[in-house]
Image (cartoon, rainbow, N blue to C red; front, side, top):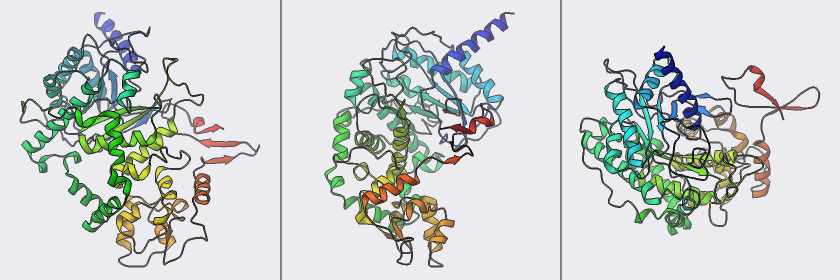
Length: 504
């Protein structure tokens, strides 16, 4: 009887604390490769995390929970802030371990994402998270993927201990600027966020040096030169990319860098943060790298400010990912915006697309946006938005352009660009050929030529091309016999087939 009561208690906590964690973004590939050793439970694959969708459209891949939703802080945007009258719950380390192992054994999850409110103090809370991970790795022999959120303000010692047990760590930046953080989350300060970021970065470097680059399974340990060589598969393409960047006056002036520095004063913070030494030399320190998250739309920053800060984080802290979370005014706080159309999800989507351009296409924030053009046109994707503002670089001849020139053409991705580079060694390509290679011609046709000809007679004029691109980006629709439109939405595992079509 006692066991039944205890199980009901755990499930009640799970209901409360899994719902409280839904605004934390954690759905990504694990980024770490670790096979089973025959003695422990589970493993981790670099691209092994699967995804499903909840009824509200959010993607889930992990057991994503808070250790507690109690909090001593009163951040205006947070549903778990201290002034809110919500039902509170707190797991014990044993309960988190039991849930993780039982869900994993049933193949419901691929790993654990663990965050927490602040209970008593940052150090006390981080200590509980460490105890949980220690039990999982030692007592329960859990060898699967673990992503843990670092608590700003916790001591360097406990952050380092957690780093040797987790696969990925993240310290949330929360807002795009330190000024916005001061207004909305006054209990959180810039130094307490940037210092653990630097500590994690230094710990990863020390671990890499201790084990050697070749023994690290995560792509996070590939240095910058190797990264670009792998992406381009040829040295001359990387040199061409550098020519692009040297040729842009805004990049020479480092305007985005100065804007990021103004937003967070990164150079003045966390300069001398170091790990306490390799206390676990046989373990990897945060092998899947670190990430962070920004809330978008709670404060009035421009897309240019946001992308400048993201670029600085990638350059200076070597982050694996920056996540963007559309602001939801869950507290109906009068001091925060309450957009009539709901959360800025389309803006979030465009920022993710632009972030992808920064990480994999060699773009810089100063190219994509500027002080005169501070926000993306949300009706078209960021690469198209960049292209229509730089028509002097087009059209591009498919049969002659180098790899990075091809990558800058809307509708051409990394795979199709490599296919073009390989195929044109053997034949002169035409529009029908590149379409078979995956090029999205409805975007690319305005910016390319094949054999010196454009696909259609068109004008290289910004407004003309923008209008056509917006038309091509319209949602997929289907006209029903009664004249009404039906549009598609993401298919959910939790809904029936009737949810595929919704009346618009």
